[in-house]
Length: 180
Image (cartoon, rainbow, N blue to C red; front, side, top):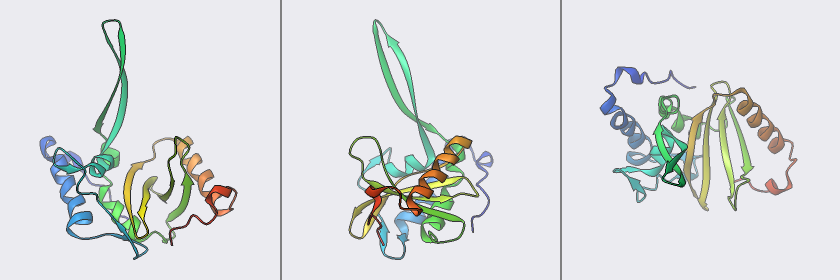
């Protein structure tokens, strides 16, 4: 179902994000993408940074947090840095969404634990260690929260546990949470 990862090493470093944005643009802006043929994946074109949709940056970069000392103060700094494992799979996102019931995709809902975050839909291409996360916007639309490549065995085990909790209906907070 999913093609090879993109070989980003063949692209000039200063042009990588433009190259990746063309893929994102074609998949989510130029043409519309739907989950289950009914739920529009809204690219939220009104939310931009550096001329590109915020969700694009969540599909191609990873947040890094580090501590910096300024005088007697310690400051926590967050920045998004390129994540080539994530970015080289950007062309997988649309096929995963459009084929969410494919045997290679484990679909599950999960209630986020931090703050008052809502229930999100996870589409896990488990044989490829790649996850797409969606959040509902309204009755018939949602947005891409992020996608990423799983690099740690423990994270893979966590996703398997979340999947089983959903499938076995072990979390009462997930009762009736399905979007379709």
